[in-house]
Length: 406
Ligand code: AMP
Ligand code: MG
Image (cartoon, rainbow, N blue to C red; front, side, top):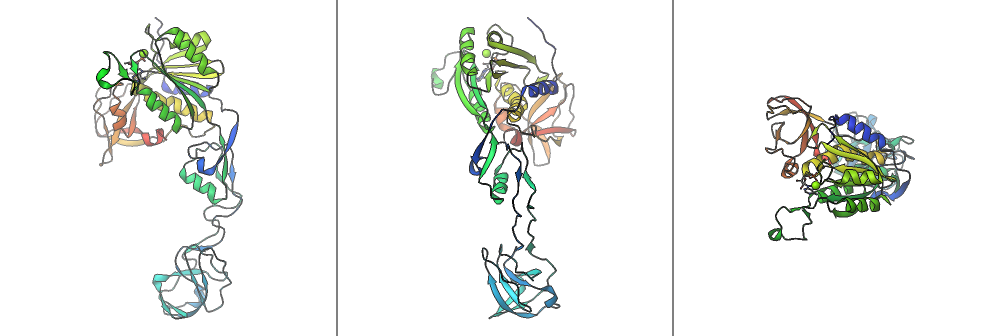
C-alpha cells in the first residue's frame, strides 16, 4: 500500500485552485433571479443616486437666512409630495415637503414637522435650522460613472437592490457550473427506500447526498444527482464515464481511502488522471482531484463531517473560482476560547463550535467525523493550526458557517 506524506491544506487548496480555470461563457439573467450568482461584468452607474437633493423628513423646506430666531412665521407657498417636481422656493416662504420629495431650488434646510406649528396657510418655525439639515444630497449613495458592483462579486439581496437603484433589470452573470454528484458505498440506502425498522444490519442512510446537493445548489450549481453507485469497479467506471459527458465537475463522496472497497482511484485512473491527496486536516484527510475527459473530478471522504468540512474549505472556493468570483474564503474572526484543547493534533483541526453570550466560543462535545449533529449544532469552525493546544482564554480563529454556507 502506498503511503503519501500529509499535505498542508494551504498547499492542497492552492493546487486545487490552480486547476479551477473560470468557465467560459456568461449569461444574462433578470436582476430578480441573480441572488447568489457571480457578476461577470463591471456595473457602472449611468446616474446619480439619489437623482436630486431630497428631503429625509416630513416637514418644511426653508432658507436658513430667513430664520434668524425661533418663532418665525412664514406663508406656505407650495406643497411637494414625493414623486412631484418642485418649483423654486419663493423668498420669505416655506414649502410643505414630504420624505423623498425633491428639495426646491433656493431652499437650504428642511425643518422637521415636529419642530413646527401649522397655522392655517402659514407655518411657525420653532427651532433655528442648521444649513443642509435633513437634506439627502444627490449622488450621496452612488455618483454617476462610478463602479457600484465589481466583476467577480457574488450578488446578495443588497446588491440586487443596488443594481436596481441604478436602473439595471438584467445582469450578466457567470454561467452555472454543471455538477454531477454521486455517492459510493454498498451500505448506503436512500431515505424513503427502506423504512427505519426494515434496515438491514450494516446499512445506513445516505446523508451526504442531501447536504452536498444543497451546498451545490447554494453555490449556484446545476446538479445532476446520479444517486448511489455500488462498490464495484465496473459500476464506478460506468457512472464516471456517463457523468463526464456534460458536466464541469464530477463530485463523489466515499471510496477515496485506500481499502480494497475503495474503487474511485482505479476507476478514475482508467478514464483519466487522479491524484489522491492525504491532507493534513481533521476532519478530512483523504481527498482526490483528477480529470475525467473534460470534467474535473473531486472525491470527498465518506464520513459525513469530513465530507461537509472538505466541501466548505476546498470545493466551495473551487466552485466560486470556476464562476470567476474574487472572494473565495470567509473572514476569520478572533474569539476567545471558552474551552480547552489539551491534546495537540498533528493535523490542522476544524472544530465544530458555537459563540456564546459572553463573546467566547464553545465546542460541541463530540468532534468525531461521523457525528453530523456537531455540524448542525455549530455556528462556525475553530481553525486550529497543526500541533497546537488551546488553553481556556486563548484567542482562536473562528470561521462563521453563515458565510461558508452562503
Ligand atoms: P469511505 O470513505 O467510503 O470509506 O466511508 C467512510 C465512512 O463514511 C463509512 O463509515 C461510510 O459508511 C460513511 N459514509 C460514506 N458515504 C456516506 C454517505 N453518503 N452518507 C453517510 N455516510 C457515508
Ligand atoms: Mg465506502
